[in-house]
Image (cartoon, one colour):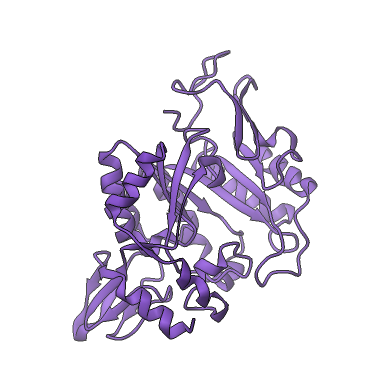
Length: 354
């Protein structure tokens, strides 16, 4: 499928964006993400999915490129209804261009010709149908993921309005390159947000298409707005795995709240980043040790099930009692369900326990 043909398919599946401002001479300014693109008629944003059509910003609406039932641990969330299923949906496009993206076929659509085949995954659907799918599947959570949810926030909000009315929980799986305006607008609908903290080098962040301080500010603001926040760092050898960078990441998270879970996860060579080796269990253990030393109460290691010992499990931060036992995405023991309190010492464990 040629890029032009894909753009025609996607452009037809849009509605008027409401996370935007009209300006003079038919220009519009988008604030769905921190790029804050100002677009003349006919121009597309950095994400390539939002565009100015005759003085009106158009935003993706009315389709999914994927919709699956996943364990919430896969997002990953460890302190958000452990063991629950999440109906996870995604569209196409991203405001970053990470060369190590595991979902690059979806995220780099219209940007990388190798992603043009993503059009075959597009399926038209309504918010009502998606929420019904979640209900019929017995899930408790709806998650916007796979591509970057910030750039498709109008679509997510229309789904989440219905989902919340149905008693479902709603979460974003995001790179955190958000504006304060969009986080405030999403606050009534979002229960939780998983945010990637990709590195602690602003030059490296700019190579990926973002800014370090914006992401740190998003973590802080989402937390202060009452969303349950968990942070993930994909630990890539020779990119962000130095002791100094891991320490800076952990201290930055702890300065917001020591209760924010930090996931250090293993990298596998993928997409255009094939020069680094896979992340070893030893590197993840070192990263976790640094996180704990920096004051974080809950540090987890991911993508290496069964190889990281206790770093898959949740322990009481006060008495070290085993509270949740996991292997990969499976939960074998959970004594926190409903109460969120350690049965041994009564300590309240931060999280959403249902």
